[in-house]
Length: 481
Image (cartoon, rainbow, N blue to C red; front, side, top):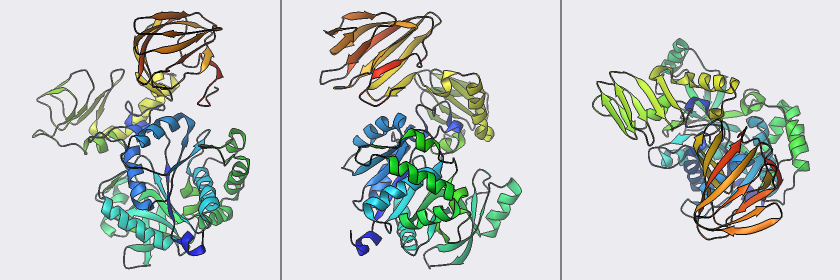
């Protein structure tokens, strides 16, 4: 690519990971916040990709995520209208944002040149005004081509204590571009009020724009340990694979640090674009509730609910009916296997529930009743001490891993479609209303050779039914743990 062409390139980089603990019980480790459906039926991940495509001008969109989330993300992307040019970089583990962005920058540098600009966006933010967003991106891109590390500052609408702030310095352009005078941590209420009243501070959106070479030079200068570790990972990575997977051993040596601490708060070439495009990081159930229209009593409802003498409540349910009588300012979320009841003004503290569940090693930290897998999904119908019952849905052409279990046997009954079963050394087909038994310690595999989803009921018996009782021998999705 020519030098001129490179300077005109903008490549979006989407960071997709994290558990979103403040949005439990809907957001969990195996199905985190980017995959939450909002009021319009779209997930945050889908909205982010469409936003990225709109400003990319045909350039590829890079998503940095994990293998655990890759297949579900890929399927979400494939279901969107239009065609995209997506590229995936897969992390073997979380190491915060600085290593992820460093490796994305190395990918951009190698494919589009060091002067290509990157637009770095988390996958779990909501932006309401896409035209205003596009204008801010244009301004940020122009500034990035001047060798600046650009962030997006959001006009504060209230004295928010849950966000970091950016204090603007001298104006660079007449379109909202400023030098960054200071990054400040999340303030207390009184300080946040001072920031709001001064007119000099913006919310730190956690979105960035810079040239790949500028960022890597800054990382090398201000966080050389991160730069050197990322360079070792990139050198050991097979760039010809699709998706590109970072090798676990060198990646584990990357320091776990955010881009803010590693670079942005240390650099002297930072800029902020003052923006007002309806941004929210959807960081709590209170923020979710504000997306819904409320009735005359201030109640917002998604699902089936009856409200009697209740005011200012948000209810999100599933198949079950939720009834609220004589309560005020509550968040009530029912996912079928868990119920959250919280004071609307203490919604940020939901993360403490997740912390306690993690200490108890409770499965509700990670899994829903329905768990998505690369081959399809399973839904837990019953989970008792002496058995576990699931409904499996296997997508056409998909294959479960060749595996065995040490502590449980399985009985499969096909209720829809046709499946191919391997049991020990035998292979055979099962059709609707046919079944088979898989004894403990028996090698087995399930495949859908048909053109439609196959549905099965799986009954597990034994003394332990955890998802870690799986020994894999072959897996087309690369899951060998």
